[in-house]
Length: 59
Image (cartoon, rainbow, N blue to C red; front, side, top):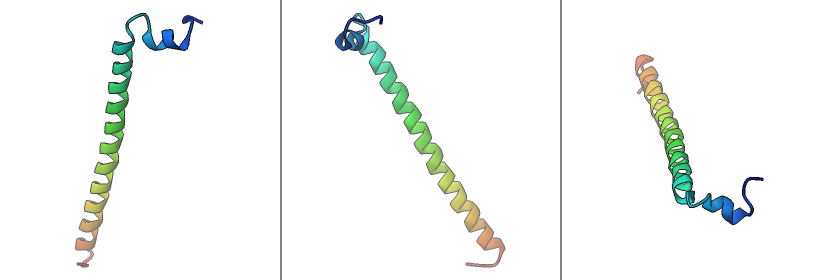
């Protein structure tokens, strides 16, 4: 194994703060992207449903 201990792994030769903050930002952006995509999907489905009801003469 490259690192002698778990602590050395987290520190990554003094580059740990940069590496782990990059991973954290990446995870945050991926999570936000997934959340926004699901939210947009819900909005689009609701809009399509509303338009279909209007075309069928309902509400």
